[in-house]
Length: 123
Image (cartoon, rainbow, N blue to C red; front, side):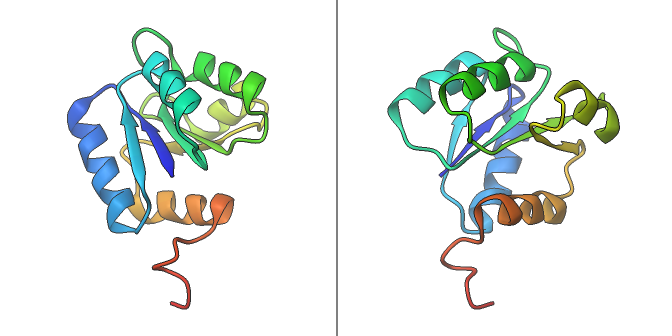
């Protein structure tokens, strides 16, 4: 299960569709606080989160996830930071992919972090 955290509804719908089309189960959150509530209730293999969001931004979300689930793979996205800047800020503790998202690159990172879905195995 992938938790997708994105405050822009249209972008969240598109990203979720990409992940589902690739065979992943996806739950969606509109901000960091909603994401934390979902993580408390449902098992998750990976988090994909925007950085700039209301209520609880991506950096604060990462800090809270690391405190409770230290080994949770996390991918941050942003249209405002370079990949090098994001990695420097996060000390390499997360993956980063710039917006606009390259669907193939996102799926490749997810496959590297948690493996392909069962529908992808053997392809």
